[in-house]
Length: 471
Image (cartoon, rainbow, N blue to C red; front, side, top):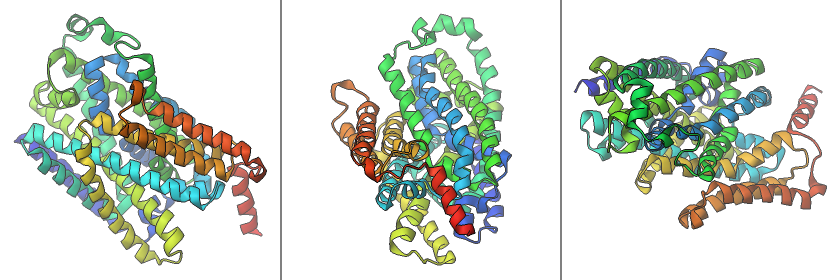
């Protein structure tokens, strides 16, 4: 029962922090991009807490429990993507936009924006849904709450909390979540490592494949995990929304440096904990490895602290990934196509209603996947192949045309859905055919319609817009 009260106390702390920030929300800009006021330390905290979610805590840890250290391939794509984002963060902030579909329309056309919004809503509600499932698993495991009720309670908290103050509260509570994550996992690892007998104990208890580069994973499968996370993060709308929320370009770039180091550290800690759990707890459900660490592998006081870290992981990712599609629905659909002159207060009200509606949509999706890892890979691939190639071309390839951008988004999204429905023909991971289709359409259609290319990069288009506004 102490674990349940620990969860309740921590969630109460988050509500307090969110409530203190909610009074500062006066406009849609405050709700969506925190009034473009976030400092580098706050950005590091919110970037870290947003990305480290139940995909890492349950999906990645479950993979590490079953396969050992080769599970780091699931995280390797993330690390490469963050390094690449360092070179884009400042440029993204210079745009001073609100959403990734904003960028797509600026570089391509309004249909690219509409499709980008559709991909965002589909993929992000799926990501939110498995955060809800993870919350239900936690409540069931440590407090005996029935799974469906635990999922509903998690959904209610996340929806209500996100409605409270949007990005302004999410960012500051993410700082708290980031600190708790770091403290909880750093504390847990040496205690569990000692319990497992250190390196010698792990090697004695586990097969040698668990310590090899690929181990029991086929290289195609390992790289498939990496490509899915790499493609998602390169185009991840929540990260760009945080770059748009930074005080200036330099702040966005500096924050990425802190983000990459802390992400590598914490994701490696999670894998190490799961590997140690595989030596100590045989025959458990792999995705519950970290929960067994909390309940059975640590002293009670340490377990409570680590449990707070687990809750921080789930809540911080869920509220951030719920805010993104709500923002896109309002900014890229309602304001762009339905009511361009919507007032500030009405925009804020409708944004909050969008959070509620999409939160309920995410809750309804929970039943369609049995494992967090399956849900994560589906959502990552849907977004990563549907949107990221067109977005990267917007920044980096002058010859990309509107036809190429729109075709790329449509192909990646469609092939992902079709390949998943078909049950992965020939055992090929979805990311390969989906990425091939997306890139083929991007390059092929751009070359076929090259006369329509602007011949200018996104940065050049932005500079032209600045000069026009100044004149």
